[in-house]
Length: 292
Image 1 (cartoon, rainbow, N blue to C red):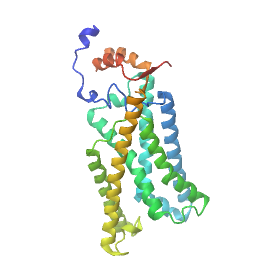
Image 2: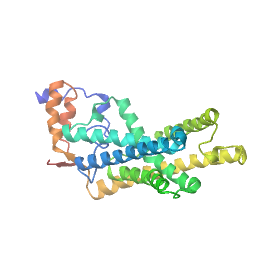
Image 3: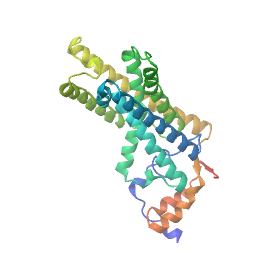
Image 4: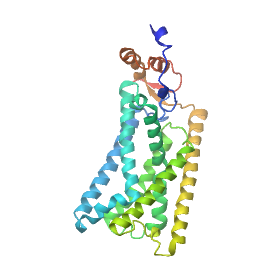
């Protein structure tokens, strides 16, 4: 029966190695699936706790103006993105650990590609936020205990969490076309900043105010952010290449997988979907199976 089922046509969205049997988005070369799940879950909880605590604190001070305005700031939006990414990534790792097949593998290809793009925002934007804040906006960052904690959480730990996700997982280098998407998102945010000024009467960042230094100054800052984004993207892409070269080619650490992958063969036979993937995964030589 397995021989006959082996020749079934595999759905097109399961063929890409990042989303398919190599489990690159859901596993680590160093941490076992339960440890990676714990790390991602803890990170997501910290991020959400920080966001909601800040909202609660700001809502109880200054008539809640700061809380209402917070969603116009790129720092805050990217921090929400980090929180949701780690929550989703934890869910994918949990489903892989428990069943041998992640939710990400069951998604259609377009949704998988969106997850890949989501990963690229997490791998690039936190560093942009950190660079811009400490270079241009950090005056008074440690004035109070609250501001010290919030600025360390949002402008230091954000990059620490992003760096950990880059170096500890088994993701592949960012596709070059993702750079176009990231620049497009930054352009949309620039539009949001001016919509905020038009509707609420304030600039989220002073360097976007053309009344201070003129439009040439604003254009200079915009192109500087664009250049920083390109540089960070290239650095992240080649850091991932370096990590893959060191861990997989030099150290032979191709991934800590779970023996529960084999159970998925029976699930696939029952629902009639992607049986070949189950058989292929069962015999997949890459990675280190963990006995749990």
